[in-house]
Length: 406
Ligand SMILES: Cc1ncc(COP(=O)(O)O)c(C=O)c1O
Image 1 (cartoon, rainbow, N blue to C red):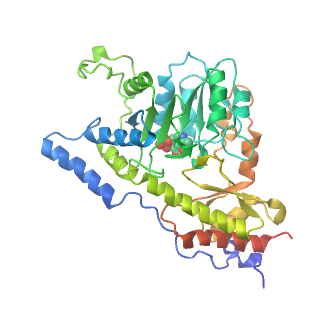
Image 2 (cartoon, rainbow, N blue to C red):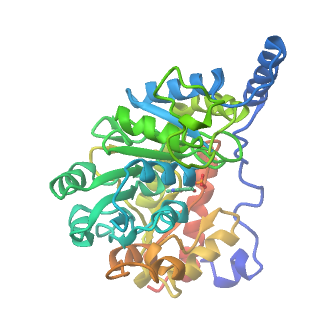
Image 3 (tube, rainbow, N blue to C red):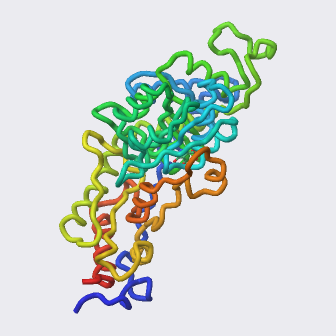
């Protein structure tokens, strides 16, 4: 006897996954101990902790080791990091800046807030990520920079995209917020562009606590500009500068510092990043293997050859022709089985009135919208076991059987 629609949890049937999926709990005992160490160091020294201290130094050094060199500033948020990397480029006013088709508002708003023209590149077909031709089509004679996101932890095709950018004189800021530690041809994402940004808020692969971010670059001058822009224009490059003499500050700027407690948490979660990535890759692989072997309507989306993603969410493709319901209704039914799903990813920039209304040129990214409409995102964390991944697959198969068209 096959599964009927009335058997589905969304229609009152029993859930495939009745027990809650494992909570992530990134912040555990190790992070508590790291915070304690900040207090203990402060007590021992007799000076309260602040920012730009030994924990930030250790954190950014560890991060740069992982990246294979470069320099980084720990800042208040990923959005702040985008703001800083863009401001550090010191573009002429009203330059055009291209953003990715699928990203977070924090990767877009700084363009508008800094008075630049906003353009949106489309995705490569079958992807949330920008492709080289799509980037080229979004460029104007005034384009000076592009903020390009590795969406969902999957690197975009860096070599051809960087080739277009270099040929057209466009500085690339890689937004690695969803892709900490991902590799492109064996090299970390973030090391290809002029600068890179990483949100380290609590749901990211490694995190500095509730909020935080890193602005990263291998360009010494950009680094010092970021440092000054992140702290009221202080001329850090001059080792002898006096922080109590604002006459020497370089320009008006905000205070976007991250504090020592956050950096200590970042250092601790960073030490597990490679293990976190490995575990997340295993979960994604288990889901994909299960779907490839047993599903007719839902299939894996292969990563770009030569890349090693750092999965933030896991996107799977739905063949609506094999179903009696829409992709969104299908995904909602899977969700109701007790699985974490985003049925309809809304992070398509061209669909946001506050951004699209201010785009120069065409605010339409049909490839990105088509890919979103054909997929849903499975949400998970590194604590998922093989059994948890199997429950994801079993839920999809149950809904598929109830809704199959053939
Ligand atoms: C791609 C991307 N860029 C920027 C941001 C903004 O980071 P934050 O939330 O730390 O400000 C995020 C955050 O989720 C993101 O995913």
